[in-house]
Image 1 (tube, rainbow, N blue to C red):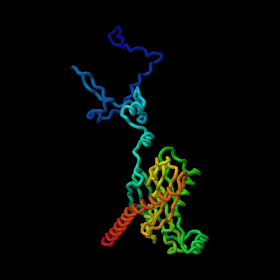
Image 2 (cartoon, rainbow, N blue to C red):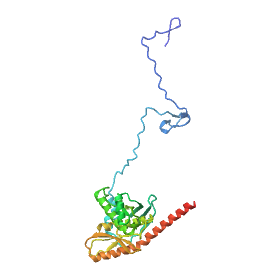
Image 3 (cartoon, helix red, strand yellow):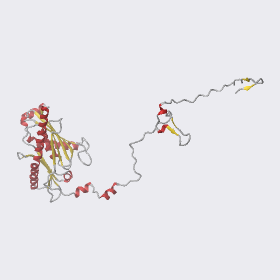
Image 4 (tube, rainbow, N blue to C red):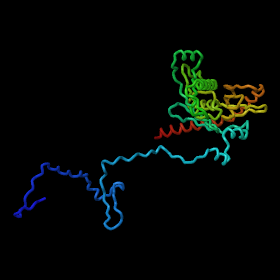
Length: 350
């Protein structure tokens, strides 16, 4: 502000006693030149409304704006109203599993379940086999040997007995059975696996020529992947296939067949029972046979309420089932041998 004096010349004012501080310029945000030529995302672009003089301009992101909240993709919002699934089951006519098992048509006692067998699956083992029964039973076996006995005392005992040793192991996968799973490592599970391993050894020892392997041991390991009934019988057949696939000298293949008898005065023995039949059975029987020699290697079973004639009939029925299963296992072993020879010939040619 300037004051004009009497002579027409401007007269300066006296400076104030307390000068006012100079106003600070507003902070300048760094502007990227590329923003003028390239539009920013919609949340950073301010566009005017349509009309005369309207324009669009881009602003730099504000450094003081709060970050965007992350979305919780794991949380699924359910419907506001829900209905119990029993209403849909009643409307569709579905039958619960227990009633379905009870109302199912009775199986032919002399009928065998379809069987699939394949040898030479595992490359880490010297011999292997896989056996699957219709209805869900799946068993995988591996065989190793002959190898030197690890324990000197056991080797001396085997040599004194006139042959080697056959070691059998049986394991059950935690997800093998239906319903409540057994606690891994429990006493009941260990006892069941130990009993099945003893059954394997009892059925396989008469078929292996242990006298040809003095001071040696042969190992067989069976893993039950799914239990749909007749698991021990399927493990016996798979273990015999694995030993033969490993090149172990044997008298014949061992074929296992299981039977059971459900409660009732006129109930008949059933070949290769399923898991529901085995759960309700009052008597069980597992037969191991050398079909080419027509010799029984093991008979395992137990129960009550059956006269001796019924057990004799069950044994004859089991032997007939073993004879009918033998061609399937033999063809599987022949196919594995052809695949091995073809792979060896291709490697030699290459």
